[in-house]
Image (cartoon, rainbow, N blue to C red):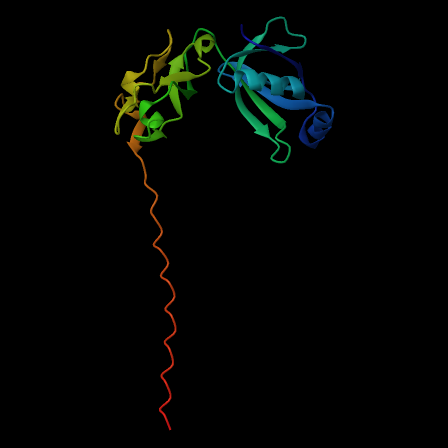
Length: 210
């Protein structure tokens, strides 16, 4: 089920938008291909909850007050306050449900690598997200990468090893031999050289007998 987020049209602009933030609202804008941009405001708590559920690459329905039809949108950009991590502005990109999009989707490692389990080598997560093409309502929340077959040094999962959900395909410009995850030789910590013991002071020569 596609999450829904309530919004209202916004007339407050410029420096006065700080008043909205103090009221628990986040200013934003909705735009898209052949879509007339509109300024909106959304409840900060609801926006934070929605971002936690769908992230920035998953479809949601924006229900703008006074409009009969909901708007299918993606969160294109979310500006955060560096001190509080709270949202200060959000850009929504309205999509056409019948047109494919190109989006970045996060890679998530699943399973356990025998090479790591038995200390044969170290796991290197080389690529953390991939660009895929699909219809807006088919965007996967994440792509699983199975590492349970990585048992030896130089074992790897490549793009050509991946199976995508139905209706989702990789960007044609991506190299199918690209390595996503691999096992590298375990690094051995260099032993620090032992400190040399301080030389014992020489015994003083005996004074000649008088």
